[in-house]
Length: 203
Image 1 (cartoon, rainbow, N blue to C red):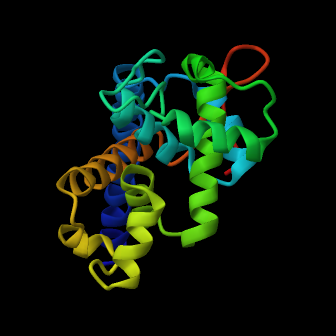
Image 2 (cartoon, rainbow, N blue to C red):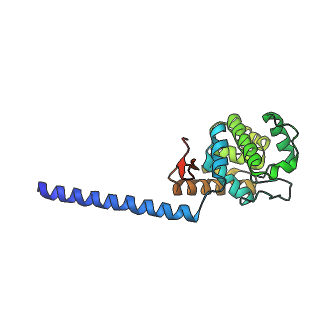
Image 3 (cartoon, rainbow, N blue to C red):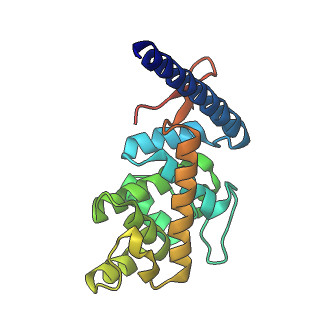
């Protein structure tokens, strides 16, 4: 009987190891299909601001499809689709001198400013990804009013309460993409070390 238990334990261990190996290969394959663009820029600025880099990447993906020169019909610009008026305020807060809106087409500057802005929303609304994303899309004033007037609870389970259909869809899309990339990369944000190989940030 003891031998039977040992045999079953051995089979369970073998199956477990096979699953780990297969999952690792699947993730390796998915990482080739879904590489992360601007990996070091996002990692650095997210680390500086204490923001989830996967969230930053998901915002970039939904906002601009990763096109640095993207301009919306409303005038939002760059990878993270920052409005010029908002960008001027961010530049003042960050101490960026001689700012002009054409600078928003520079990936490094856009990621730096967009990540700073996300960080400011976290400071205002607390550590809640759903509320922060809604504020990034609909404006902090609208979201503050929705919460104050109990139009929206602020919970992801009540996202259908958000008055703006665009914002409802935006929040859901960003969260889906964030979770997808977190899964692919095992929750570890990659970066290139000095030899050009991949390492991870210590988030």
